[in-house]
Length: 263
Image (cartoon, rainbow, N blue to C red; front, top):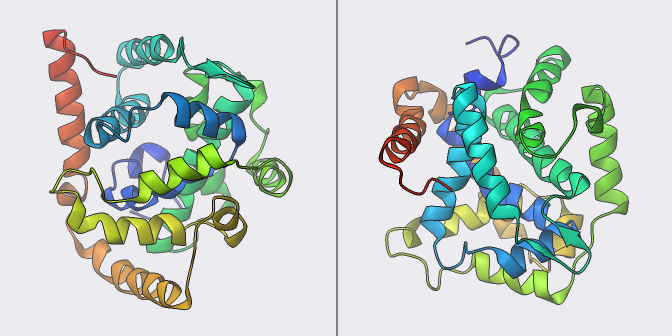
């Protein structure tokens, strides 16, 4: 597919985007209201696989599901968010939700360009507008989003420069999140690569903020990975690259039919 003629729905199911999942979460945690909320309420550490499933379910349903399915999942997320509140934050805070959705929009473009090369401004504009559903499906209003992609870049840079902060609670949570201790045995072999991507995708100031180390050796490995991956990944058939997304959507629809927990 032409890299200058794509929409979010065309790329959202690419398995390569999972390489940005960890850094997306850490960007979110670096905004203190989100960081506190996750550290105090998230069950990711006790059920990492299921939390990944629910996150991917939300992302894929919002971009590939029917309107009825999107509405149903949004109601489930809002119900889960009802008890997520504490000092200086609530999960219904539109500014916090905007930042969470913004990290999804930003990293989707970032990872895609890592593999397939630069997008045109018009393509970024379209994907940015498509990505707004991640926030507007919940409490974010359309007018809360910066009006153009250029404005979004200014918003992104402003948040990174002036609004991100951290505290021991969040940094401890980040260390636990990146640790392989307690992870299911089948996730441990990939933990090293995921941690490399999680830290390497972040700018130095965000790594420092979250108390993460980064060495010249890690930088070399990170650069080497992308040089090889960007060569190999595009030759993999699309039906293989999209397989995990089909499985997630199939599981979601099965759970809906049987009345089982989705989120």
